[in-house]
Image (tube, helix red, strand yellow):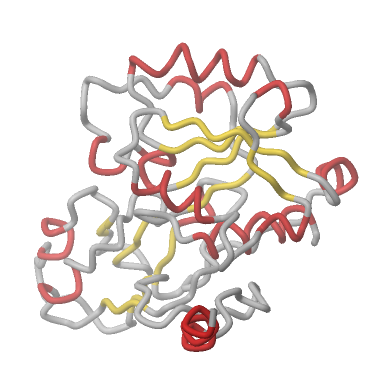
Length: 252
């Protein structure tokens, strides 16, 4: 018993008391784009990006833009840029309620803030049940989804829980690039949910297809029909990114 108590004391407090204020050390979060000029005819950053998340527009006011919906935050753009335009901070607040809101530039460094949905707050502000569907994911985002309810994050303290059946769910948490083999299952899961219901896209694969975006094994028509209420970028998406986003959306 004394050995167990000694181990518990050594572990310290594991839960995060204030999820909104947490800034995990070492986390590669929001990309920062410096205002320095690009080298003439340089495309090194775009060529290094594995998901085409970097868009170059030399004639525009913002020469470089990064789409966080496609960015896997690998950091490969930073070391190859001769102008040292790229860096990353540890900000986990990366969510947006629109796809366009995930694009950042030097002149527009901040992601569009998540807007409180009065309709969702009134319906789900005190209790939200979510069903996770992995539509061809690599299990990276899926592992982070599982972590939402662990002792560190304990999202259940806000009345948000993961459920096993879509019939008990208010929303669908989508991870993975949406393979053709999972398309039918994804539709069935959403159709089984009672109205009203929402879709949350978690991870670069779910939002844009990620590194698999060009694969002919995908069928992403689902997102053309059912627009997500919340986009949670990352590869994988950090639990704190989702938690801050969903709390803002529900006005918690």
